[in-house]
Image (tube, rainbow, N blue to C red; front, side, top):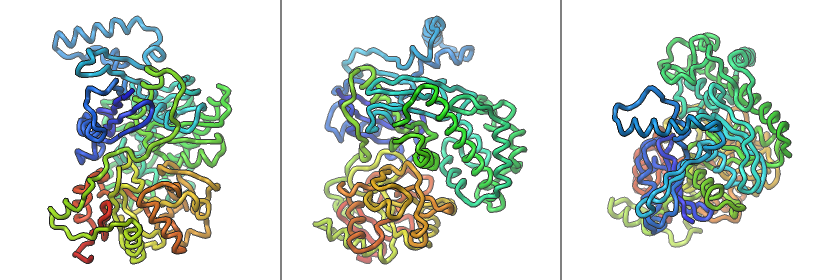
Length: 581
């Protein structure tokens, strides 16, 4: 059974093709439109999938969407279009829904039955169930707990529950004005950043050196401005406007005053306010982490969880700092976060829910995550180089290619890689990556200033072989973090050897790669290991600030020649600036 899953009109539109519970292809629309976090309908992603899989639209058995608009049908009463047909349709739906006494349970999904000749049946899956399914059905677990938290779905801001095979049992639901995602977004905006976009930048700020007294003061403000209520904090109206869409700010004047917020932030990167930003960000991260831990302990105890496995999803769990803390806490034995826990992943999640919980209805048959789900590069990238008259060196064997890449790394060159199928999600995992040596402290500033053009405080993630992770990082043997979803700590004795990937608090958003997998990046790391080098590299996304990650050879070439990159690797080709081959 082939299902097309969609995340459309939400943050970062995407499309995913799922066959019998397995991801065959998944892409986000921004990779084609080149519009960061594009919300438009993912026509390009759909067409790319059809082309890649060599199928026609008529071969799709069902369409799944990670949003159920029927749940919202009674929310806008009184604000109706002045067109009789739309008015009649709306009132008809509202009339039926007004008789429903249990919307939360009865409308987990809705559907539109079609003729099936041109468009297959369409299933609308509730937002947080799509989030949960994205994690559950890509995890290795057959049973466990799940938790989804973000700003807001149709009505819910989060759900907690238990799953067993394909049975998903919701145990607790949070709604506005209780919202973990809204809290984080509000403080992100207060600090001068863009909500629903820059939360991860604020997370990076929270790891910087702060003033303990001010942090403690701001934590008390957060405690005063919220109430403990289930899995998400209740945001008091005196302090937050997160459930008031017509308000200019997500916070009120009272909260901004209590948090010593400047009246006007003209430049969020102004160093005069940097220490204040760090203190508030640290307080926010500390407060919401402590709250979520307490809430998870409470609801899991109330519902007799064995706390063996937990699947996390929703935009809040892009917070790799929290994710790492949860794993280290041993509250749960095993923690799984997908490669795309935010809305982007709901194309996968909605299709998974539709397959397992609506159409298939039996035990799951897949239990592994696919990281590289995008388009492959052309088989002969040299034709593109010849067309644009770009000098290159071609390699018949990967061994020779890796040897030359290693040579450039030793010369402290910054290298971009565009090879194989692209990653799904917002984090580069080696197919569309920028890499360089992690042992030189100046490389962090070099990449920030000359290539990424971004804030100087933001750290870069390391990548290493899974077999070597416990040697250099404070993790157990066999530790796996394939999608950079958790933060670990660099071992103290190696901080001086790995300064370019060590954040100010000693942490690092580590990516591990299984030694037995294929791919250019793992070959480079293995070669470094053979050469008695520390097999750890900086790995960051191959893009400029404000742009999506590159997707095609053309994207890679343009980004290469408009930045301070030294070396470009496209499949089996190497390109150098100034024709220095």
